[in-house]
Length: 341
Image 1 (cartoon, rainbow, N blue to C red):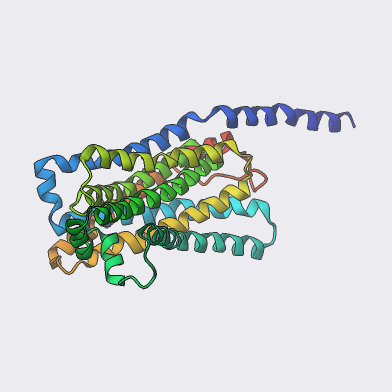
Image 2 (cartoon, rainbow, N blue to C red):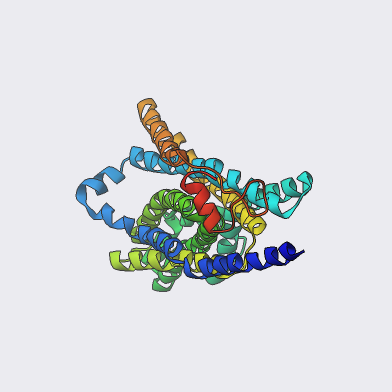
């Protein structure tokens, strides 16, 4: 009987230690999020003449995006989706309850980018003062950064030029803000649910897919349709990127259980699947690429996957609290990643 009294008391220091760890161990995740945010300055490298000349070639963009696709898809399959299964299973005992929640979050992540793009398009139409009857060709070319109609409007009317610029800048900044906010959620959940080793693995995958995106954004913002100065373009990218810090802080400050973290990781895996398979991988099919160039781009894809795959050496999945084996939230998971359960 006396032993029964001791056992619950023994959990109090553990819970207190856990709470202390969760409230004080903000350094690694926030440092990682800041590193992701600093990736917004990658556009500076395009100012160097050799890099600028090379970036004008189709092969450069194809290899860059193929590398990002390999890193994104590897991060989704090797890390996020697999770890999510262990964490989600903590919250529900029935397999069907685990599977439908896990699968639903992946599908929700898959559709998030087009939903955000649609919302941004609606906002831009409202700013433009037009309607859905606007020529679809103009809208698609505006988003691509090379609209002929917008270019004519810029030369004919200063007001139209300002509105066309506002549309493009708004699309880039707003879209990036929500994209980076979600990245922050995933980073915070990775560190909080599975420890520093897993968290830094997600940071690597995030940075690798941010680089080509930030390069593309920089090209759009400094291109003829927007014509922002270099400093303003970098500032716009950096400001939109600060949402990764906000997202990370939100997850770290909230009381989130293992099952919820697993759902967030599954959602993040879905987003990464979309970005890798829909936004990045199709660059390999650029008709301007020759056979040898496509092989080079495919090699870049494999390299991106290998970079993430190397993280798996010595890596073991985080053992959720209450699951088989042992290991707790935060510190226990970090120990599991550090070299065994």
